[in-house]
Image (cartoon, rainbow, N blue to C red):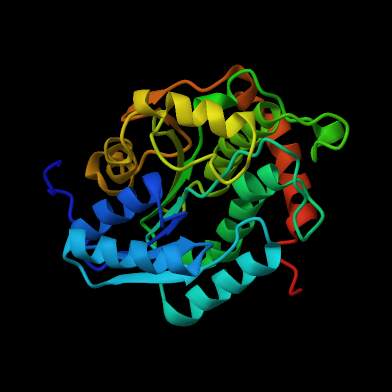
Length: 289
């Protein structure tokens, strides 16, 4: 385990998808450093088990559980409201939850689920919590993405995969959206003391991709022994969330623990602005409904 020299005592952190894999390992790392950690999970039973494990491994009782399905806008709004009612600040937001689905699924909002759970849910959550984050500055937003964004484009003419759906196409598009969202968010937050960065933590051995039946699950299961551990991958997330040296760095892409250059498509500023507008239209973050 890394030395815990970057203490974050008293800081409030949210980790979505904190009940397993990188999310749970990140929650443990933040709690070990003294953070007050809120795990966001979709399933209550798994969430409670993860909460108990994070408390035990970190020896920190300040570990909370909140339930939300990031693919449901109503659920995300309820999460944001519950968090604001209980906490007065938010120092670190780790947008980690995500999934890859072999078959096309439609959410309760009528949207393709890969795009909704990996991008739109986090776009909405971040915007709903942005006033709290700004008041907490210096604060950090970390979006977990993937090298799968390379070679992908945003299919504005078929954003929901109605004309052409494949797991890799949908996932790559969503992960590119994470990067574009990060860069545009960083611009909007300039001068506020809030940073926004994205991170590819590595190819990780977790339960990711196992929620859907089909070839995708089989490929992931066969390849998983060659993946890195969630604990090792989470070190990069924890470093980005706590390191003093990275406190003022914003609008960057990290591959594991090193700053790197993302795909050429991810630097298209008009695409980023268009994606932001479309995401606002779909999620309506400033609407009261």
